[in-house]
Image (cartoon, rainbow, N blue to C red; front, top):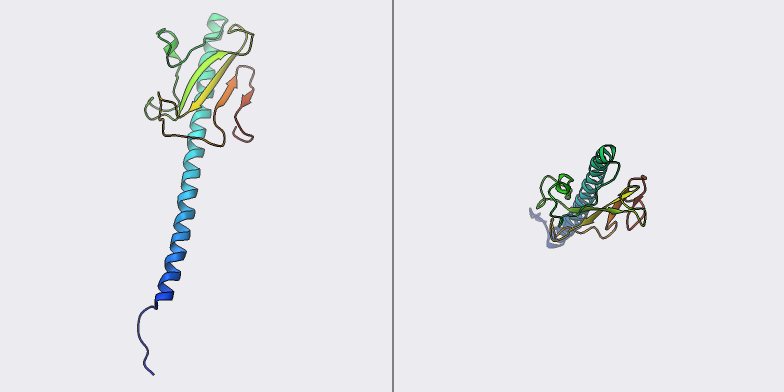
Length: 146
């Protein structure tokens, strides 16, 4: 009986199948980690802007509503994007009054993922829009996003 060195076609196909399964799992895990990291970036940006709002409130006894489209130079002292620059950011931040209370009593910060003014390719299908108000209430489109 002669023994041949090497692998059979079945052995190679099984090894290839296992590698494809592991690669698919690794890619999915990586994408999930990236989305979680960008979501953390959005939450941190909301907390930073809320600190700016509280400092503004301590001087002016009113909060400041703003958006990325506001032309008022003083308003742009508030950071309207979540990252180091607007093009690399995943969330666009705006501030508006809470309900009918007006900006004197309450401000609501809203972080919208992947708008045209920030990285428009970013999507967060689970949590979507994040928000934080000056009363400490945190909301998102799903549970467990904060």
